[in-house]
Image (cartoon, rainbow, N blue to C red):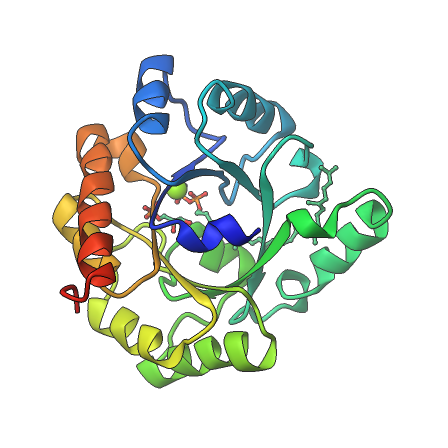
Length: 239
Ligand SMILES: CC(C)=CCC/C(C)=C/CC/C(C)=C/CC/C(C)=C/CC/C(C)=C/CC/C(C)=C/CC/C(C)=C/COP(=O)(O)OP(=O)(O)O
Ligand SMILES: O=P(O)(O)OC[C@@H](O)CO
Ligand SMILES: [Mg+2]
């Protein structure tokens, strides 16, 4: 899905967490480039369908990040498929994907699938624990995963995941410098517009998740901060 490459700011809505209609409307109409529905645990078909129906009242693109095939449903613009490059278990690198292909291969539209090469660097987050990610990585390990994603596996997305904690902008910069084709997505711990702008200086796409539920007004303010930084980068003054 080529339009994804132009996404600079994205909100990630967790089907396991409540959001009222007024906030959902403000979020969808905020100028964000897209909404991703996804989470690590408690992702049910009911929760996913509820968010899909409510987000669809607005024109913002809506993606499902698939973490549990039991919660798969048609109707999203794109299906993001995480591959945890630094998981110690093959299940999260290829096993569940193989099972999903056996089950849905005949009905799926490959054009709607986009693989994300995840590198999870916060060892305390739920996704790291679930996937048994080797998150104790030196910067050169992360850079090597980014190169693997782009140069060997030809993945369209490299997702540097700090879920729940704000990351190291210097590392995001280092990773960006070795990527030329893959889209660099940064996510984790963004709670202020300043943090969002700092990460948007290096990452192609910045994802804001938990702040929606913990600091809503700040979460909304990240949209303009990212878009301004994206404009600065576009016109050559950002980095
Ligand atoms: C029926 C239909 C519509 C079919 C369409 C075709 C289709 C899309 C088929 C699926 C194809 C396919 C290959 C699916 C893969 C299936 C699968 C389960 C893969 C494994 C995914 C994976 C590695 C999950 C691990 C966890 C992970 C990386 C999650 C990413 C999201 C994340 C880190 C969220 C943050 O967590 P959160 O829950 O928010 O944590 P907090 O609450 O602490 O904030
Ligand atoms: O929830 P936060 O910490 O903002 O992280 C966003 C996203 O990268 C989670 O997958
Ligand atoms: Mg979350």
